[in-house]
Image (tube, rainbow over the protein chains, first blue to last red):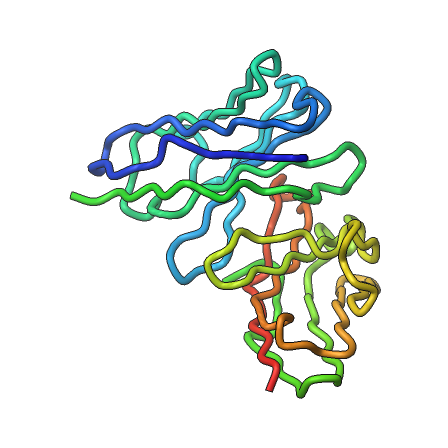
Length: 120
Length: 110
């Protein structure tokens, strides 16, 4: 059974850093591209970025480029989002999601999300 | 303002059908496939339709998708109370080089 579990969220001051983790189980992570999507309270989903199945390529939303970095450890079935220079507008629930090969960037399975709150 | 445009809300009585539209441009819907997500309150989004008209396993055939030019549609027939949710279209944008989501449509089953 496919399972994605995010962790690492919490409260942080503006300018601070957090590292989110996504643990995958029930499937072989190395087969899938992986995405981070966030959702601010009362808003729709906002795509944050994605990383190829082998980690060789990454794409980021303009709003986080230069501040956020995705990485993955396929041997440990883990996927990460390092967030620096956090801003109030980064406050959101952050989801990891998997993207099967050839799906046309379809986010087939999602975690339950982890809340990041940026506030002074 | 979202790159993909959806109506803010649609509604219909139980048993009837509704269509949710998603309008984009040549750099996204016009050249890439469209995916649809359903999000119930307090839950993570769930993939409802992928590659324009493909239903993931477990999605009832009351849900169907289509695409024409730079627009896509999600049709829901035989409305049920559990269909009340927010619906989002999404696609890759070849110019922006990112996944873009529509602003979402809230479905109310009257």
